[in-house]
Image (cartoon, rainbow, N blue to C red; front, side, top):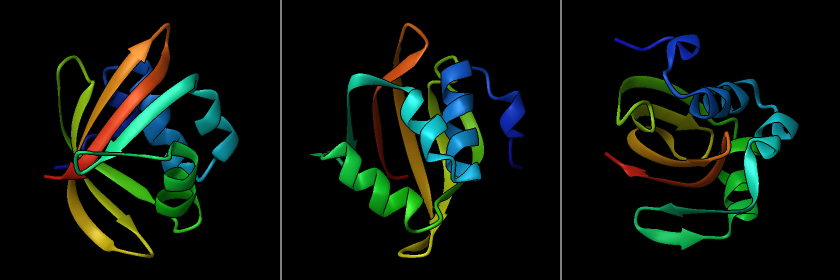
Length: 107
């Protein structure tokens, strides 16, 4: 069963999922620290390029199934127009209410 986004525990992670699902790039970018980083399947990626390709230009959407680590680790169904739907894991590092790093990959 999917967790309603509004009920996710960590405010920064909740805002991240909300921005992804609303396709709100400005809100998404405002959630990140100026030096934020990310990785996909264990490899660091260029954050701006990845976000554009995997989220915003391909209609990315997250349905969170489970959270742990005080809401900073998620298991979610993720879908976009490029890859279809897959089960994914997400880990977030939050500093001062902003996301400084996120890591994702297949679950």
